[in-house]
Image (cartoon, rainbow, N blue to C red; front, side, top):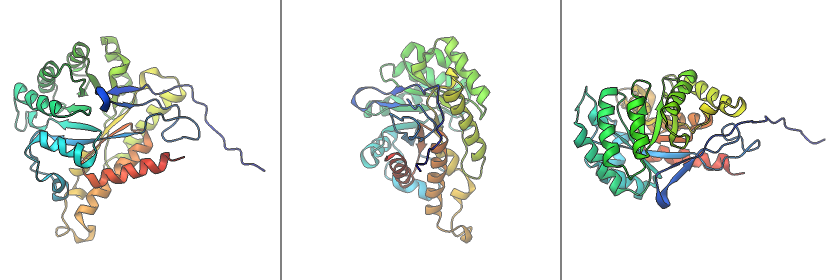
Length: 315
């Protein structure tokens, strides 16, 4: 007797979004079933990994995270190029950590020039991620949008407190937006509605639900992502039918478990292996929850996640 496997019927589809331009443009989304449920639907575009680059040399990274980039850590352009040429990065995520008003507070023109140099040096899509300080992000991202108006950047984060001003930048210069909301399906939907009412087209929008790593609330982020996918695919909620990005690298590598050395806590084992596995496992969990783009840091963790994607999609 043949086994009849029950299958869910889906009425919705995730929108396809193309990032960047030219031969190295990347398309994400398009799923017609729950994440990696290839026995029930299609996934025309595999999840992608964006490699993280900072716009200045970080001073608080653990040694394991610094090691692969030690020779380029002071040069964002060289850093981004190394990610592409040595580690096969398909997308670069430039974290504008230097503009934080509580840190270096780099001015808008200087920060925008850094973005322009990195963008000019790459032929892969570039995500530009601010600090979630509304006033500073608006000031900096407006200048970035103007200076790189022909680059098809992906700009983040766009939040309810600044969506009008940053949304106008995307409309004027045709940049894609990442709509960020604090781990809540209703807030995610509301922000997408607001951006749509503003005039941001559906093909320039990605959801950032805000995520956490293992041990720091991952299960809550996971459940919110699940609910977003359920509403999009089975409840025909068009305002949630967008690709999802998870900026997981910063969450992992700032955690105590990633930073403690073996000497400080011998019971936790090798610090390098621990950090890599923590990033890989956190990213894999988010992959299973529905991530279309994962922002990651360590090449070895990325290698593990890529192998997982290949294994899960080889049917």
